[in-house]
Length: 244
Image (cartoon, rainbow, N blue to C red; front, top):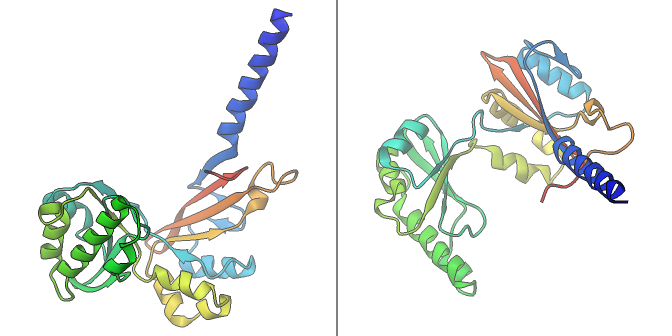
């Protein structure tokens, strides 16, 4: 009887182990082909392939996601000096981070607009963060140099913890236009934005997941990475169930 209990428990542990490890998986492909894609394809060839499988347009994403927690000025300069889009979370996140767009090393835009009145009726922690977002946005004026902006982001003028990251300038237009339909996104301007970036994301290729024939994967995200305008790497992340 005791042996049976042990066996049942062991089998349950094995099932749980394999479920956790198989339910979330990332495939990385650097040679050969994967689905309809071939490593070494040009961006134009990849676009043609995406159109064939009805996955165009794609979403441009950062080639390398960067995060710094409470960074110093020198750390920000070293990490983000070549980034056109920098975003910051302050204190307890109240939702979207403050995003800062640079062109020729000067601020051209900050968004979204943080209005202090939005936080008056929130819990105290969010209210404090909201006020700090408002103050920070007022400090980061249009036309300010990148160096001066980085000095502010380094924390000398901030009172709360902060996390700094990067984003693709223009990616918000994909999300905004996607609500209007694919034809609104598939424009020359948006195509140029995608071509200017070296990492593209779309949701698809479920047929490449080994268990897709008997259960529908909850997630299936494909990211295409380019080097010198040629496909160098494919990352396919998928999950059998919703990730909390």
